[in-house]
Length: 96
Image (tube, rainbow, N blue to C red):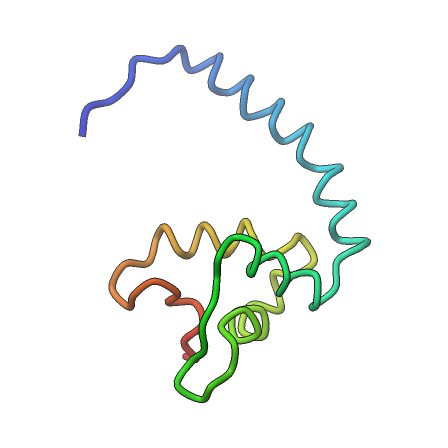
């Protein structure tokens, strides 16, 4: 894969600014989120259906990712989904 020729100091500055902007948002989410909100968030991005036990996928995903909830489900869900290709669309809902 070809590499972009970017000034590393600008990349570092952009990452620092993103962290500076994102930290208060994550803190706000941590103080205000609930399991119901996290399930609704997944439904809003189109996560739908049921697992083999007829449990709604948003419920399954949130229940299996509960430790990530203090910062919200979207970031870890998105990261996991992008990294996981071998088990299908919603691999993080499978019980390990």
